[in-house]
Length: 218
Image: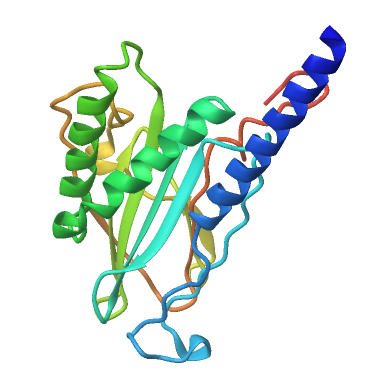
């Protein structure tokens, strides 16, 4: 009887996790914006693609791609440490906060500063910090610039096709800035770079680089 009860509870839990996974996938972009606004996808100044492979049924990674104006688009990516339901719930919480930050969405530094403040205010009641990294970028096809801010996240790669090189985006004043939710008064700085036609920006989470080989080397 005990084994049957455990089996039934496991099935219910698996059903719940499957539903959570489906909901989590609907939180990701279902279609990408085109810029300038109204352009056909093939004529868009920016093109996007993504690959999302959680290691468990539900994961702690989240990203969004949102138009801000006729020429600007915002890309947000975050990574909650750990896997499973706890991390997935926090990503849902962050998504809700991000939706409320439209008034400061065009300034990456202000955006992450306000996101951190709101996130910290919620987490302080939980009694335990949660390591959450994030990166936020605003690209403008009218000026060919990208403004961004980083909260302890791996720096994106910038493939400069015309120059024939790949580099990490430079950090603000060369310094790392803290992950989200650790310090109430953390202030994040915006940095700007120039984009040339054909350039590629690759944003990713540490799930891409913290992969262990058979000899236990990353």
